[in-house]
Image: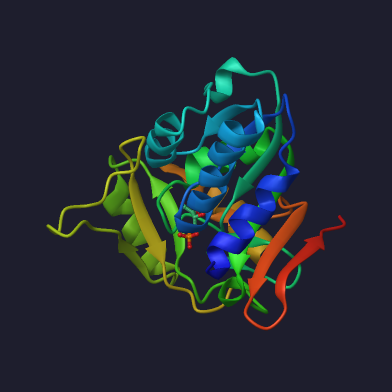
Length: 226
Ligand code: 5RP
């Protein structure tokens, strides 16, 4: 098993019968969704999934996982998702797979959030990974100018054909190449207040447990106390 698979399988152990489970997006979350599918087939696990992207929805449907939208459930018991970076104080950057908006909504309404990563994602300070910001297309050029004027090194994320990548909600992603984020809470609050910004990839104080795959020590589970 590779590290992503190891943490994906480990995280699925926290899923119990009857739970409503937020299903994250990405190459690590993929393994968690597969493992839940296996447990449903082989162990009669009975859950309802709330997906965070079209890609995960497709995978979950193929596995026969019953799904509801976030607006059809009264709560989410647990959300399991990947991350692009996790700092020492367990804040995260997410959105490398452009699914940050639904990921943040589902995590926000979840009683518990588990992040699953390989050890390469654990960092001292956030920011080496470009910070994704989801913006509506209308006015996005103005936001690019604004971010440039604040020296946030913005770049519109593009598809292979050079056109802007569209998120599941048909928005654009502007990646901010920051290198280091000294004050993530300040930056998050500033981004929250910019017109046209739909959501950003700073996930602060959201994870209650982090499962890290390491090549030397196997799977390490960290309980996050807030
Ligand atoms: C998607 C995400 C992913 O969880 C994040 O990009 C990690 O992905 P991977 O497990 O493929 O490295 O935030 O929007």
